[in-house]
Length: 473
Image 1 (cartoon, one colour):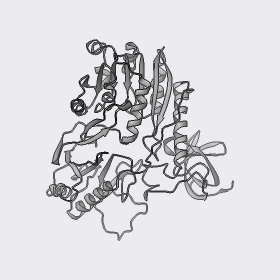
Image 2 (cartoon, one colour):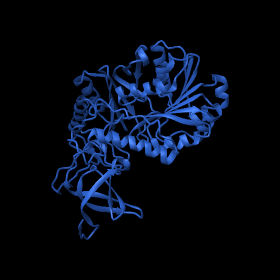
Image 3 (cartoon, one colour):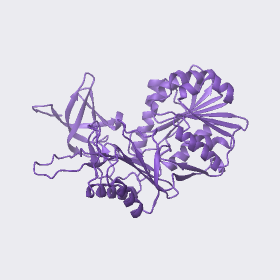
């Protein structure tokens, strides 16, 4: 390799990209130092500019690709390389799956000291494009440009799209996203065009001013669509946007809005108002082992897995690992809208679901009633505060626990209570193998890990779901 001098950081020529690294970046080694580089794949040979150097590693960016890897895949997105959402889209799907499998194994072995001899092959997604049932877009007065506009460029009203990675106030105008059915693109572009034409102010995140803040679009396998417009302040004519959506998109089953004048974008604690149509959309999931299909009502604040076909597979693996008996009491921690709880309910005596978001618990109860399932109960509250010895005494000692926590994993008090309850089995579903590994290490005092099943819910991203079967020693 030859080194070319630069006044800033050096540009190093003919660097071989060797592996996949953290956060969707690829890895090269230069003079024994690991260099993380985005938007390249193993097997590429590229000129790399070092942009940040630490003691044990460096970060770089591609200046020129000299030789393309046979592992490359054709791009489907015009925003690849700017939008940070699908960092692996240029990598063959089989190689994506292999990298995710390795990611799970590395985290469990290194962080959790887990024996991975029963790690099963990752379950890939049949659809790797247009597979999401939910996308959230952001309005911003600060539009991001790859090329800075000239001084004579006309002023812009802002952008509607996705945040640029590491830049909290910069949003990229999305012209086409290949993750959700194309109707989502049509709705987003129509909203942006209407807002600009009618001078509806986009949100300024620095000054916390403006009307339009977020746009949430959901769809279901039943063909229903929900659109939620989040506004930060009422502005003359904003209802015209809602009328425009109602009148021009008859596919929208549920049109809603949320008023959010908080300092952050979270809306799970805020009420939604139905502007037109019904207050929910309906999803259907096939039952386990020939059980009747389940019907779910999905509202703006409620959680549902964003890849519906893979959710079916994820829950089927969880049910298989749980090996539930007809007399069992099952606890479903972080139950969301009760999807896993209801998926398992027909197999056992009773299911107790616990979830932080009150609206999700309301939906879980409605979903149980709608599916004529009577052996479930759902409770709202902070898991660490709800799951106490008193709660267990009142609701029954669990034989099996299913836990599906957020990315941060489980609170230490929750783990302590699981160790105290000593269910026969724990099935740990995780969207973050690193925090899962940490929790499994703490649970190893009384549990051994048996089968491990990764599931790819999010093609083209570095994210992976993983299921671990824990058996009481």
